[in-house]
Image (cartoon, rainbow, N blue to C red; front, side):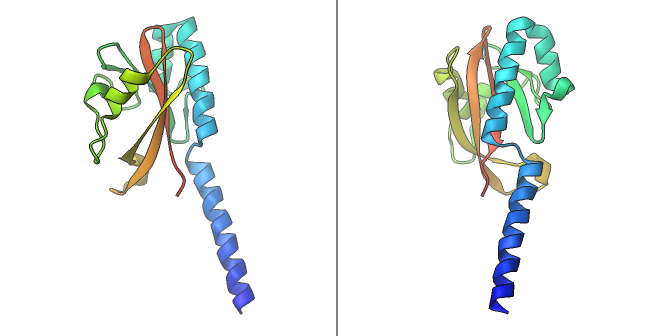
Length: 150
């Protein structure tokens, strides 16, 4: 029976990880999405911002999406928060997430800003560790955030 219990625990762990992989984006997927986003912004910034917001063309994957802010911090693309100012965004621990993004983002370089945030897709108030991969392109600060697996 101990052997059976061990098999059940291992299998449930594997299914749990597989379920996470199916529902939530990974760091690699976030990096790939950001790379695609940068290329699109370089081709047609206005069209790219529209695509990022609507998710057309696979630009919203699982729980991953592209966000871009104007130089004043106003979100120009986001699935729900267009017009919000990212510079005022702090997490529950007081991390000045938006300020860190703007202060450190550079063209042709991807930085990481890690913070705590609820997962809106879960309906829970529990906070998780999230990292935004962020860069500057065509005068914008753009990024894609992913949640860390637990």
